[in-house]
Image 1 (cartoon, one colour):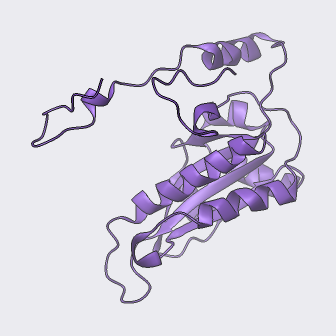
Image 2 (cartoon, rainbow, N blue to C red; image 1 turned 180 degrees about the vertical axis):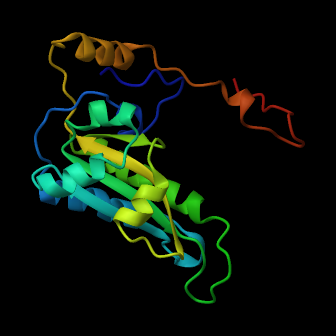
Length: 201
C-alpha cells in the first residue's frame, strides 16, 4: 500500500495507516499487541477516566478467536477470519468517581482506538475497525456489566500483499486498491459560524 495521498506533509504513521481486508493468517506477537494497547492507554480522556475496555482474542487461541469471530456480522467474518487477533471494544457509560453520565465516553474510546491503530501501523501491523457486530450477542457471550456499553470490533494483523488467489480474494484486493479519498477541509472546518469554511490554501 502506497502512502496516503495527503495534501500536506503529515507525520508517520498517519500517512501509512490503512484498513486492509486481507491479512496473513498468522498470529501477532504478544509484545506487539501489548505495545498497541499501551499506546491506546495513553490517549486523552475526560477527567482521565480512561473509559475504554478491550477484549482480545489472539489467533493462536482458537476457541477464543472463533467465539469472537461469531460476534461479527457475517460479511465481516468472511475476511476477518484471517486476522492475527480480534478485539471487541466497550466503554464505561458513567464516571467512576461519581456515577454521572460520561457523554464523551465513546469519543474517548475513539481516541484510544486511533492511538492503537497508529501504533500498529508504526510496527508493521494494520487494523481494520468494524461497526458490524452483534451487540446483544457480545453482551451475553462476554457478560458485559450494565455500566459498560459494547461498541465495535477491531481486526489486527499483518496485511497480505501477495497476489490474490480465488475470486473472493480478488474482490477484497480490488477494494483495498481503490483510490483512498478524503473530503477537503472546507467541508469540515469552519470559522466564525457554522458552514463558514476556512480558507486554507
